[in-house]
Image: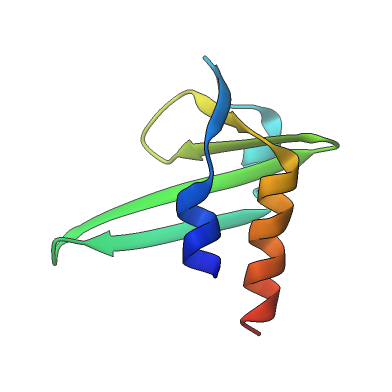
Length: 79
């Protein structure tokens, strides 16, 4: 369920600069694929605003807060 929720996240809009909430992320996801490639995405939250950004990119995607909350619930269910 966690992977399904993670891959279902979609940007609602984009910001040219990363919001301050990403400096202390609520969640960081590291993925590995093709045997040697990795990607890191940080998720930040400030009140009702949720953003996500790759470590190597300056901007951020703004996400729907409810979808991010569903992702966190799915993560908690894994514990």
